[in-house]
Length: 278
View 1: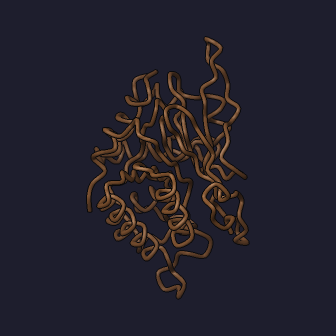
View 2 (view 1 turned 45 degrees about the horizontal axis):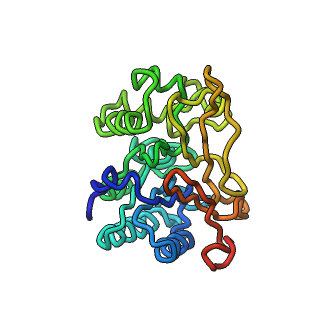
Protein backbone atom coordinates (compact mmCIF):
# COMPACT_ATOMS: atom_id res chain seq x y z
CA UNK A 1 0.00 0.00 0.00
CA UNK A 2 1.16 3.53 -0.74
CA UNK A 3 2.33 5.19 2.47
CA UNK A 4 1.03 8.58 3.58
CA UNK A 5 4.36 10.27 2.93
CA UNK A 6 2.83 13.06 0.82
CA UNK A 7 0.72 14.38 3.69
CA UNK A 8 3.24 16.97 4.86
CA UNK A 9 3.66 18.28 1.32
CA UNK A 10 -0.11 18.76 1.10
CA UNK A 11 -0.62 20.35 4.50
CA UNK A 12 -2.03 23.42 2.74
CA UNK A 13 -4.33 21.51 0.38
CA UNK A 14 -8.09 21.46 1.08
CA UNK A 15 -8.71 18.66 3.60
CA UNK A 16 -11.84 16.77 4.60
CA UNK A 17 -11.91 15.71 8.25
CA UNK A 18 -13.95 12.56 8.97
CA UNK A 19 -15.02 11.66 12.51
CA UNK A 20 -15.01 8.37 14.41
CA UNK A 21 -15.98 5.37 12.25
CA UNK A 22 -16.69 2.60 14.81
CA UNK A 23 -16.89 -0.15 12.18
CA UNK A 24 -19.53 1.63 10.08
CA UNK A 25 -17.17 1.54 7.09
CA UNK A 26 -19.76 0.18 4.68
CA UNK A 27 -22.02 3.17 5.41
CA UNK A 28 -19.44 5.92 5.92
CA UNK A 29 -16.82 5.31 3.23
CA UNK A 30 -19.23 5.75 0.28
CA UNK A 31 -20.24 9.11 1.76
CA UNK A 32 -16.61 10.18 1.99
CA UNK A 33 -16.03 8.92 -1.55
CA UNK A 34 -18.87 11.13 -2.77
CA UNK A 35 -17.30 14.11 -1.02
CA UNK A 36 -13.94 13.38 -2.64
CA UNK A 37 -15.51 13.41 -6.11
CA UNK A 38 -17.92 16.31 -5.74
CA UNK A 39 -15.56 18.59 -3.83
CA UNK A 40 -12.52 17.59 -5.92
CA UNK A 41 -10.50 16.79 -2.81
CA UNK A 42 -6.90 15.66 -2.66
CA UNK A 43 -6.64 15.08 1.09
CA UNK A 44 -8.65 13.17 3.70
CA UNK A 45 -7.91 12.94 7.43
CA UNK A 46 -9.64 10.13 9.34
CA UNK A 47 -9.95 10.80 13.08
CA UNK A 48 -9.77 7.19 14.27
CA UNK A 49 -11.76 4.58 16.17
CA UNK A 50 -12.09 2.23 13.21
CA UNK A 51 -12.23 -0.63 15.74
CA UNK A 52 -15.14 -1.61 17.93
CA UNK A 53 -18.85 -0.94 17.75
CA UNK A 54 -21.76 -2.21 19.79
CA UNK A 55 -21.85 -6.06 19.59
CA UNK A 56 -19.04 -6.15 17.01
CA UNK A 57 -16.36 -8.17 18.78
CA UNK A 58 -15.95 -11.75 19.92
CA UNK A 59 -13.88 -14.00 17.71
CA UNK A 60 -16.55 -16.72 17.58
CA UNK A 61 -19.48 -14.35 17.16
CA UNK A 62 -21.24 -14.96 13.80
CA UNK A 63 -21.60 -11.23 13.28
CA UNK A 64 -17.99 -10.34 14.12
CA UNK A 65 -17.04 -7.50 11.79
CA UNK A 66 -13.83 -6.14 13.29
CA UNK A 67 -11.28 -7.63 10.88
CA UNK A 68 -13.50 -7.43 7.76
CA UNK A 69 -14.22 -3.80 8.61
CA UNK A 70 -10.54 -2.97 9.00
CA UNK A 71 -9.71 -4.75 5.75
CA UNK A 72 -12.41 -2.77 3.96
CA UNK A 73 -10.90 0.46 5.28
CA UNK A 74 -7.37 -0.62 4.29
CA UNK A 75 -8.46 -1.44 0.74
CA UNK A 76 -10.34 1.83 0.37
CA UNK A 77 -7.42 3.88 1.71
CA UNK A 78 -5.07 2.07 -0.65
CA UNK A 79 -7.32 2.82 -3.60
CA UNK A 80 -7.47 6.51 -2.69
CA UNK A 81 -3.71 6.73 -2.48
CA UNK A 82 -3.28 4.95 -5.79
CA UNK A 83 -5.49 7.68 -7.29
CA UNK A 84 -3.27 10.39 -5.83
CA UNK A 85 -5.48 11.33 -2.86
CA UNK A 86 -3.61 11.75 0.41
CA UNK A 87 -5.45 9.81 3.14
CA UNK A 88 -4.14 10.20 6.68
CA UNK A 89 -5.27 7.50 9.08
CA UNK A 90 -5.10 8.67 12.69
CA UNK A 91 -5.27 6.36 15.70
CA UNK A 92 -8.19 6.54 18.11
CA UNK A 93 -8.40 5.26 21.68
CA UNK A 94 -10.14 2.04 20.63
CA UNK A 95 -7.51 1.44 17.95
CA UNK A 96 -4.72 1.93 20.47
CA UNK A 97 -6.21 -0.78 22.69
CA UNK A 98 -5.51 -3.24 19.86
CA UNK A 99 -2.05 -1.81 19.21
CA UNK A 100 -1.25 -2.33 22.90
CA UNK A 101 -3.02 -5.69 23.05
CA UNK A 102 -5.17 -4.50 25.95
CA UNK A 103 -8.07 -6.53 27.24
CA UNK A 104 -11.11 -4.36 27.90
CA UNK A 105 -14.86 -4.79 27.88
CA UNK A 106 -14.93 -3.51 24.28
CA UNK A 107 -11.94 -5.28 22.75
CA UNK A 108 -11.22 -8.83 21.63
CA UNK A 109 -7.52 -9.45 22.44
CA UNK A 110 -7.33 -12.52 20.17
CA UNK A 111 -7.90 -10.24 17.20
CA UNK A 112 -5.25 -7.74 18.29
CA UNK A 113 -2.42 -9.09 16.16
CA UNK A 114 -4.33 -8.87 12.89
CA UNK A 115 -5.88 -5.51 13.79
CA UNK A 116 -2.42 -4.15 14.62
CA UNK A 117 -1.02 -5.36 11.29
CA UNK A 118 -3.82 -3.74 9.29
CA UNK A 119 -3.39 -0.42 11.10
CA UNK A 120 0.34 -0.60 10.36
CA UNK A 121 -0.39 -1.40 6.71
CA UNK A 122 -2.26 1.91 6.48
CA UNK A 123 0.58 3.84 8.11
CA UNK A 124 -1.60 4.91 11.03
CA UNK A 125 -0.26 7.90 12.98
CA UNK A 126 -1.28 9.95 16.00
CA UNK A 127 -1.46 13.47 14.57
CA UNK A 128 -1.82 15.51 11.40
CA UNK A 129 -1.71 19.24 10.65
CA UNK A 130 -3.67 21.46 8.29
CA UNK A 131 -3.56 25.26 8.00
CA UNK A 132 -2.11 25.59 11.50
CA UNK A 133 -4.66 23.20 13.05
CA UNK A 134 -3.37 20.22 15.00
CA UNK A 135 -5.58 17.22 14.20
CA UNK A 136 -5.76 14.30 16.65
CA UNK A 137 -8.40 11.90 17.87
CA UNK A 138 -9.13 13.64 21.18
CA UNK A 139 -6.89 16.71 21.50
CA UNK A 140 -3.72 18.04 23.07
CA UNK A 141 -3.79 19.82 26.43
CA UNK A 142 -1.29 22.41 27.62
CA UNK A 143 -0.26 20.13 30.48
CA UNK A 144 0.42 17.18 28.19
CA UNK A 145 2.45 19.38 25.84
CA UNK A 146 4.55 20.61 28.77
CA UNK A 147 5.18 17.12 30.13
CA UNK A 148 5.78 15.23 26.87
CA UNK A 149 6.57 17.77 24.14
CA UNK A 150 8.70 20.34 25.93
CA UNK A 151 6.04 23.01 26.33
CA UNK A 152 4.36 25.44 23.97
CA UNK A 153 4.78 24.77 20.27
CA UNK A 154 2.97 25.20 16.98
CA UNK A 155 0.80 22.59 15.29
CA UNK A 156 3.59 21.26 13.07
CA UNK A 157 5.96 20.69 15.98
CA UNK A 158 3.19 19.12 18.05
CA UNK A 159 2.31 16.79 15.16
CA UNK A 160 5.92 15.73 14.74
CA UNK A 161 6.43 15.27 18.48
CA UNK A 162 3.34 13.13 18.96
CA UNK A 163 4.13 10.99 15.92
CA UNK A 164 7.70 10.52 17.15
CA UNK A 165 6.38 9.16 20.46
CA UNK A 166 4.21 6.71 18.53
CA UNK A 167 6.90 5.72 16.04
CA UNK A 168 9.35 4.92 18.86
CA UNK A 169 7.22 1.90 19.75
CA UNK A 170 8.43 2.18 23.35
CA UNK A 171 5.94 1.06 26.00
CA UNK A 172 6.48 4.23 28.01
CA UNK A 173 5.63 6.46 25.05
CA UNK A 174 2.65 4.41 23.89
CA UNK A 175 1.27 4.33 27.42
CA UNK A 176 1.64 8.12 27.65
CA UNK A 177 -0.26 8.56 24.39
CA UNK A 178 -2.99 6.27 25.73
CA UNK A 179 -3.20 7.88 29.20
CA UNK A 180 -6.84 8.28 30.16
CA UNK A 181 -6.64 11.18 32.59
CA UNK A 182 -8.87 11.78 35.58
CA UNK A 183 -12.12 11.57 33.58
CA UNK A 184 -11.51 7.95 32.53
CA UNK A 185 -8.97 6.61 35.00
CA UNK A 186 -6.14 7.49 37.38
CA UNK A 187 -3.55 8.54 34.77
CA UNK A 188 -2.72 12.20 34.40
CA UNK A 189 -2.34 14.16 32.19
CA UNK A 190 -4.72 12.70 29.61
CA UNK A 191 -3.18 11.77 26.27
CA UNK A 192 -4.34 12.87 22.81
CA UNK A 193 -6.43 9.70 22.41
CA UNK A 194 -8.48 10.02 25.58
CA UNK A 195 -8.70 13.73 26.45
CA UNK A 196 -12.24 14.60 27.47
CA UNK A 197 -13.72 17.69 25.82
CA UNK A 198 -14.01 19.41 29.20
CA UNK A 199 -10.35 18.71 29.87
CA UNK A 200 -9.35 19.98 26.45
CA UNK A 201 -11.33 23.22 26.50
CA UNK A 202 -10.25 24.02 30.08
CA UNK A 203 -6.55 23.41 29.37
CA UNK A 204 -5.90 23.72 25.61
CA UNK A 205 -2.36 23.52 24.26
CA UNK A 206 -0.96 26.97 23.60
CA UNK A 207 0.00 28.30 20.20
CA UNK A 208 -2.35 26.29 17.99
CA UNK A 209 -5.93 25.59 16.97
CA UNK A 210 -7.21 22.01 16.97
CA UNK A 211 -9.64 19.61 15.29
CA UNK A 212 -10.75 16.50 17.21
CA UNK A 213 -13.21 13.63 17.29
CA UNK A 214 -13.89 11.39 20.31
CA UNK A 215 -16.88 13.31 21.72
CA UNK A 216 -20.18 12.53 19.93
CA UNK A 217 -21.93 15.71 18.83
CA UNK A 218 -25.07 16.49 16.75
CA UNK A 219 -23.09 18.28 14.01
CA UNK A 220 -19.55 19.54 13.43
CA UNK A 221 -19.08 22.70 15.46
CA UNK A 222 -16.64 24.88 17.34
CA UNK A 223 -16.32 24.32 21.08
CA UNK A 224 -16.19 27.09 23.63
CA UNK A 225 -12.61 27.28 24.86
CA UNK A 226 -10.74 28.98 27.70
CA UNK A 227 -8.71 32.00 26.55
CA UNK A 228 -4.96 32.14 27.06
CA UNK A 229 -3.08 34.85 28.99
CA UNK A 230 -3.22 37.14 25.95
CA UNK A 231 -7.00 36.81 25.79
CA UNK A 232 -6.98 34.57 22.72
CA UNK A 233 -9.19 31.49 22.78
CA UNK A 234 -7.82 28.71 20.55
CA UNK A 235 -10.25 27.42 17.95
CA UNK A 236 -11.25 23.84 18.71
CA UNK A 237 -13.60 22.07 16.30
CA UNK A 238 -15.44 18.84 17.10
CA UNK A 239 -16.15 16.26 14.38
CA UNK A 240 -17.47 13.02 15.92
CA UNK A 241 -20.82 12.95 14.10
CA UNK A 242 -21.03 9.30 12.99
CA UNK A 243 -21.16 7.56 16.40
CA UNK A 244 -24.22 5.53 17.43
CA UNK A 245 -25.68 4.77 20.84
CA UNK A 246 -26.16 1.23 22.17
CA UNK A 247 -29.53 1.02 20.39
CA UNK A 248 -27.78 1.88 17.08
CA UNK A 249 -29.41 5.29 16.95
CA UNK A 250 -27.32 8.09 15.42
CA UNK A 251 -25.88 10.64 17.83
CA UNK A 252 -24.93 13.02 15.04
CA UNK A 253 -25.85 14.01 11.49
CA UNK A 254 -22.84 12.51 9.69
CA UNK A 255 -21.48 15.93 8.77
CA UNK A 256 -17.78 16.37 8.01
CA UNK A 257 -15.46 19.34 8.26
CA UNK A 258 -13.60 20.80 5.30
CA UNK A 259 -10.66 23.13 5.80
CA UNK A 260 -9.49 25.25 2.90
CA UNK A 261 -7.18 28.28 3.23
CA UNK A 262 -7.96 28.62 6.96
CA UNK A 263 -11.70 28.64 6.15
CA UNK A 264 -13.66 25.84 7.80
CA UNK A 265 -16.96 24.62 6.39
CA UNK A 266 -19.36 21.98 7.67
CA UNK A 267 -20.18 19.53 4.86
CA UNK A 268 -23.64 18.01 5.26
CA UNK A 269 -25.56 15.28 3.47
CA UNK A 270 -27.58 17.99 1.74
CA UNK A 271 -24.39 19.65 0.49
CA UNK A 272 -23.34 16.35 -1.10
CA UNK A 273 -26.79 15.49 -2.47
CA UNK A 274 -26.95 12.20 -0.58
CA UNK A 275 -29.39 10.60 1.85
CA UNK A 276 -29.28 11.84 5.47
CA UNK A 277 -27.04 9.85 7.80
CA UNK A 278 -29.05 6.82 8.95
